[in-house]
Picture 1 (tube, rainbow, N blue to C red):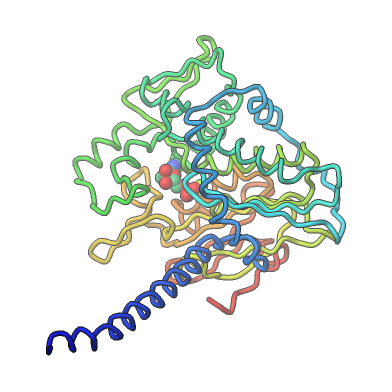
Picture 2: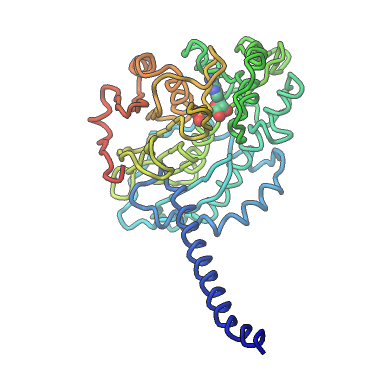
Length: 419
Ligand code: AMP
Ligand code: MG
């Protein structure tokens, strides 16, 4: 009897607890959803966040499928044409889109990051959804061409075989461009920017979540393999060659290169107003409808992902940010991040926590945001001022801001209240 009555008494209690657990679970799911959405907002169009985040979950399943379908670079005529024809596209001619243009957005994961595209279109002959699909294929095609972790890519073939025969390679022009830019910035930075840092990058493995400081012997051994003279292009033999055990990693420049290719592709299809956000690499096409500026939020280097430091305004330019908060681990109070100094083999300690570069082409912004992060405030800003058409904003580890000469006049930087 006693046990019977106990059972009866506890039944409503159990139901009550079950309902409570269910309510907590539902609340948690929604909370996490909001959190996940926030993390995609980092450096996007400042005032349009709701629409952009809503598309994240809807597109993920489809994109997973496409990754496995593509697998390695498939040089379809269509993709080859899309990429090759726009490599040197002239970005200067764009039309102003009318105020009543329709806004389209899409978001998906690729290049190890969240990709966001915004297009404003007022031309009834343009099918924006189809352009989104083609752009996604283009981005995945580029990724499988350049990513060192994708088997069959240019980079992994070169790294595995120490040479790459480009005589019959459909994307030879793409890898020539990457090589030329990598060589240019290596020289300009006196070796601070060096794509042959790959062995050291792999040793630290920060992008894959390693949390241990490597042994000094290992750092020395991998650093000994680094040197731009070990990465050469042999025009007579139509080959790229890696010597002395060198390997390459285009992580500091590829997203910028990709952003330029996407811009050329979109413009060649008649798009005059768009924003491409490759996770911190922002490229704008033309102006917003009615010739308005794009308003871009800058990530607060001391804040959580998605927290804004401030906003700035651009038209038809790219803006790329590097920072020590993007990929890092903390050990014994020291922050070890993903931008490595070729002089030491350790994460760069330059006194900066963030660098942002604005210019016409994203490949240059990408290379220079990484480079200036390593060089530090003084040498980094001197380099930017010595170049035509570049502007920079740096944030020190102490929270101090540094702007290149024209920056404040040109981009209307406004500190954010949420900082
Ligand atoms: P970013 O986020 O554009 O500043 O580039 C950082 C990425 O570039 C790292 O995750 C590495 O893959 C790679 N990298 C690290 N240090 C260097 C360096 N000194 N020169 C060129 N690439 C580097
Ligand atoms: Mg970079």
